[in-house]
Image (cartoon, rainbow, N blue to C red; front, side, top):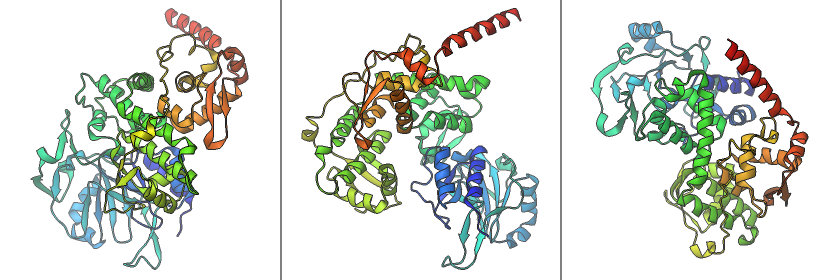
Length: 509
């Protein structure tokens, strides 16, 4: 029976809510839809809608560290249940969720002890410490040629919390421990992490901070602040960072120690990160700024496919900025095509003809396979590119007169609007959307949303249309009038009165 997309989308939401990292699989298939499949950032609700509601992707659940040490025992034959009756019975006493497949079952556990350990080989039993499993309500064809009737993965019982178990609780285990010193990182808490993994696309050294490990920093607070800076620099939005900490930060982290105040603590780190990034721009950022400014000049692109070439190159530059390098950039043609808003075939042709890009893997661009790239734009082309100054004079004014105005309240343009207005925009120089993204490190969609509010409130002016729009701050704009237009006039006064009453009540108590 076919499942409608609504049930697939709702299931994906449920998996993510329970701390399981999902990855889209190809339609009616077990193979990942994207590569690298296991290094994608935290999926936003919009992405989950796109994958499972608007499209027909199957759902994969990633095993290992990204899903809080998910460990799945996969039996490929229902006869195994009879053969290993006592072992299966012991597993069922642990009350795991069980997924029934066409030939066998998946038993879901969470176990960090399996890292670096091995299991005795058993016929038709697979122990999934990494990779992914197909999850309900995915549908795939069966048979060697993937033909014939369809079957669906389904839970034999309602979804329950996945039991967290130790090595001693598992059957089929071996006493061997494999290459612990060479292939794994041992955190301060004693947990082992495979060196080759990049959970959620995060560098392993930074991910260990979520496990309570200070790494090279003096304190947990410094380590977590450094992680937030790393995530913003990699293009993560505020909601994605919050989800990452909420789902993956363990006991022993400063974030967990904050208890009910953890969201305010993370917000404070998020605000501090923008100040640090604006004041400490990397050499690679400045170089990519100049390349982006050159690429955004339409006069530099000639021929029938000029606009397509420009879109693909700008999309590639966004990926380069996120990775923070110009060589050894790992990106698939599909990823670049999606960022440029084009189909894979067109993007592949464009990537093959842009002279500044060199790819290395078998000299072939694959839609799904991640290709290694190098960016090399001749210096002579950039010699005339304008250098944009980075205005930081307003950055430390988070307690000053500007940010305290009603126009920057939550229902107005907010703190992100403040950064865009005061850091990303200038009242003399026109700036493109990509320049604003580079200067503020705020998500492009967020900037587009805020800019509409700012224009309506009379704070900025816009020149051009669609992809050629340029933006400029209006000098000496009337903030009071803007607050009235946005409907936030008087908000600060009301908040102060409310806080005064609350402080009085607290003192009385």
